[in-house]
Length: 206
Image (cartoon, rainbow, N blue to C red; front, side):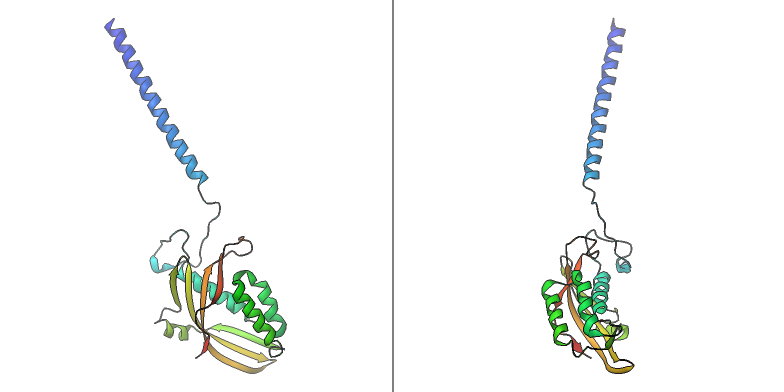
């Protein structure tokens, strides 16, 4: 009788252990399911990477190098003309409108209208002046000042060369000071999810 009772107790212990194990596995499965549901549907990878912090990157944090690359690429893009700035400048502002804040875009569009006659038949090169910018940035190559929440003040130097046909009419080394901020809109319209919202200081000639 005692052997039968002992066997029954052992069976109950085994069943109890299996029940507890199943409950634990169900909890782990539920936790994994919640984790999968909360995984972001979109990821942002910034290239080139910011190697100043090694291989680390914080989720949702824009690297300083990317803020600089964005500011130079977008402003340089609208200020590069092949033949006729009077038509190419307004056209590029329309093409790049998703990368500028509304007020700054309006300011640039009004400027393009005022200068339309002066920009007729004018080509423009917009070239990053690395050495000049390194002097400004104590040899860092650019100046990016984080302001928090992915807002940056970006400073760089660029050479602006304007020509009419082959005759050079302008060759200036300029320093620009831009505010770069987050810009939340569909990614197919703005993969960077950033915008130039304005200038924190007037541009100046070196």
